[in-house]
Length: 290
Length: 224
Image (tube, rainbow over all chains, first blue to last red; front, side, top):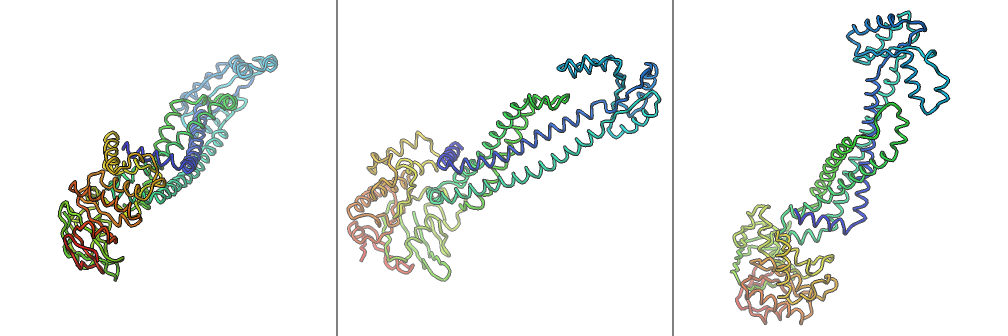
């Protein structure tokens, strides 16, 4: 195996432009793969965040007593579709408002607890039960308005589905393309080394001695592309974290969990190993007759 | 050592070898002569199992060429060194690396390879050229490199297909003297040639092929 590695290294070193071209194609493939994976995982987490959030918020009319609210809360708790409820008093609402707008003192100065309504946040076990709970709440005379973020979830679900489908199609296409590029480059190298292979055969080289360097070379291109794509993706994510954090607001996705990044590095290196190996084995089977 | 028993080889309708039978013993130096197209190269290519005979039996040492499994072919080839008229050296490797290749395929370790290659390059008198590439060598030096590569793995048989064909007479004689010396160590030499002077001077066994048939097989023979 050491000799095969040495030969593979020599093959790569002696045709640097082909090596760069192959690694760049693999880089592009894995960069797209990692981008879709990161965006997909991010939107999944965002969706979960909204699904976990109190999904319906009932705002109470001015003058509603805590007794009225407690009886509604107790009635809701008896429904098996309800996961949890949380009462937000006028004072709590003010605190939340002040926390959210702490960077804009003018906005916080103008608002007092008297103008903010008390509310009840209700989380259901399943998003489908949300409309039913909203109907129950709407019938309560003390309820001014029911806010239902189902449209947000609906949009997010369709965005996540699109990201997954488009991502799978693009990455699938790129993986096939990358495999074919490896087949082409390794095939070309086999032809280029025809006389060397012929001499090796006559000297009594075993088939694996001749084949292994080409297979290792294909795997190297795959792994080099995947690792460099991971480094660039992680770098970009790290660089844009401050900007994206502000954009995501309450959704706590960033900074990205290093364990998640390590797991996708492992996954992409494994995939690269398969793509590079598959491409080079196909080339060896097709072009290397021993 | 080498046995051909009623061997024929056909390429479509043309016959390259026709009922060839002969035996070559360990340590013999045998010339195979004949006009172009007589079947000399076919004979040598059967011995390296690049070609299979259409009929007949061929034995090299303990290997039956016609029955040997694909996985055992490398082992056969390790026992048979080959030297070509056009040297077949790798242009992107130095003399040292070209000769090392024969030991690398055998799975030898680097320090062992270095020792054996040094020994063989000194023996064929091109140690001082070890860092040169084939394009920087003369014909004689290139052929010595090819011979060094063929014998460094200590094969039982050395096949030489017109090894002096591209060399001037003086250089050709140097190569023949080298092959003679290798033969004196016990290596069987089987050499295809057109060179009458060499055959007639060396007075070794001569097998004459014509139209794929052996027409003469004589000890201390001549090439007329």
